[in-house]
Image 1 (tube, rainbow, N blue to C red):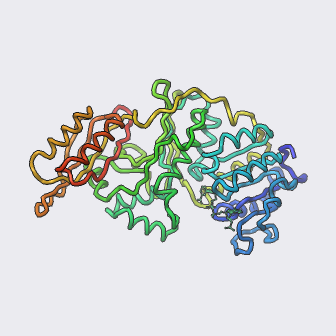
Image 2 (tube, rainbow, N blue to C red):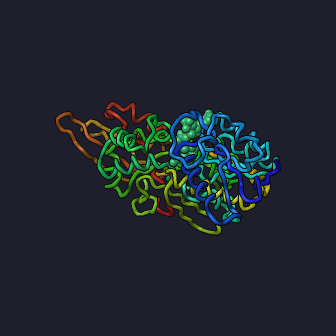
Image 3 (spheres, rainbow, N blue to C red):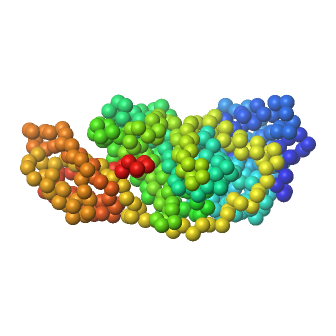
Length: 438
Ligand code: NAP
């Protein structure tokens, strides 16, 4: 096979690796296409590979086409486009590699394999002169890979910043609106099917990390390995933090950011952040995703929409499939020459910080904390004393700092924890910098 997709005069053969939530939606979309009147884009599912072929499925494809045999798809001359919708690295990486080496085009929604092995897979696609498209791997139905890969290439990208995990955004939005605690909202999200029974990938930030690694590679034409990306999840956020943040003019979101310039290098980070209430990102609620791209020519661009779900994800997958079926070819640019951005250290990142601590309600506490911060070259912007519990002699102290270096803040946090007047350092959150605000 040499990358030609038409398996007969009329139709392009599709082989599905995976027929779960997204795979079923794609299979149904392909069936609808097959019945359409336009022969130039006629598609048909030749075979679908699953783990358990006996499972009942709500799909409009011939049950005989469903099996556990990868060879029904990979290197099958009837299959011009392999659509990988299994997820994970093993065996997806091997299956995608084999399909590309067999001269088949591949479309995937798999963020993990594209984050961890995207460079290698794209090089394999180039060697075989076939396409490897992955629009659905980041932000579900939102077209963001295509714009970064095509429309924005004339720009030097200053930053890519987004809410790219719907599960955590659903949880944080509910915590903010209802004053609920993380564990209660997580349980509700699991009941509603918005969170997995093992929520680690979402709530600990891995999913967002894979996605920002993919976006950073595209924006900066350089590999951004997942292990150089700073990652923090949302388990430590409390209802109180939303209340205090709101009094200060902020909300809290899980942000994924990649930013670069010649002086500071390239920094990618995933962590909860205080967002000013008057910027658009603060109003991205529920399972919605949004990505903001800043380019030197275009200025600020805003992409918002459904970041997951069977049909929005199938929309992105089908866009890639149809592009190939209509004759898109590998332009050899997918693994373009890396730029020379050094990877910046999170320790050098500078921003304002929000600190919440439980302190003894007695004189001198604030002076002690201010001294520790001052010793680390951090100055205080504002202080709130809240929820004073006179019976137990304790109060919440909420401190906003002026911009400070991450390494200094972490060192000060260690010292604050050791102060005998501080019972607990409950929260340490970064404030995201927008324009000339901070
Ligand atoms: P899913 O519902 O769990 O489906 C996975 C499918 O792959 C199932 O059909 C499963 O077979 C099959 N499979 C898994 N391991 C296999 C193996 N070793 N051999 C053969 N078949 C195997 O997952 P999904 O939600 O559709 O997600 C698929 C991909 O899309 C993932 O990469 C995910 O990150 C990405 N994605 C999903 C969404 C979303 O909203 N769900 C959004 C964007 C991107 P059985 O059916 O027999 O178990």
